[in-house]
Amino acid sequence: MADLKKRLKQNVYGNYFVDSTCINCDTCRQLAPNTFEDSGDYSFVQNQPESDNEIREATRALLACPTGSIGTIEKNISQETINDFPLSIEDEVYYCGFNSPKSYGGNSYFIKLKEGNWLIDSPKFNNHLLNSFEKMGGIKYIFLTHSDDVADVEKYAIKFGSTRIIHKEEQDAQPNAEHIIDGTNTIEFNKDFKIIPTPGHTKGHCVLLYKSKYLFTGDHLRWNRYKKCLHASKDVCWFDWQEQANSMEKLKGYQFEWILPGHGQNIKLPIQIMKTELEDLIKRMKEINQQ
Image (cartoon, rainbow, N blue to C red; front, side):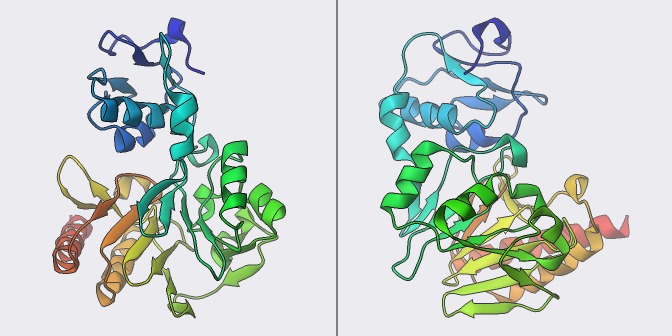
């Protein structure tokens, strides 16, 4: 729970505040962009939420914050809002919430399917999510994009008897994983799921394409809400930037409408606009390589 004594001075006066334990992971700005902003070192409350929708969004951010750095001076609606999670994105795809500090606040996702549910990367091991996942049919598969965002995945796998899927180059993070990917070729896991190795951010980084519509991108690709474009960051490329650019080229061979990243803003765009945005990003990455 946030500590009012550690309240950041950048916060505008009012009920909601961010304290100095914030790790600036961007979770709150994704969920409530009208309320929270980036100071460079922390998130802070730039506008106190006023409408019912803004208050609900800010409360979702409070609940999802990995470090518990968001608080309120007076009462809030967290007891009611907690039932929003997992938060519906579209169709049977959900954002889990309850981001984990172990993955620096990385996002995780849930897909509800009759044939067996999927978890993409891991949230905190949380009683509310445990009960929600159980009511929705458990977790059959857990897809891990890379080693950075495994968080509490082992606990979820044990609880639900899940099959964890991870690349061989990332296996040190989950040595007991049940399904190991190897190489750089795309894997047709079944008719709806493609696993696409995308080395760059890490050596064994992979993305997951569901129904040629939803691309779960881990730390490979995200939307920049300020510049209004697709984005990849060389500053957080831990393996090889040229390989990440090459991996981005690979994605041109697929179609998708949604970018659902581990870190950063999600976005839905028409397929052709998404292709154009991807081509523009690849061009920018090549220009950086030539510098």
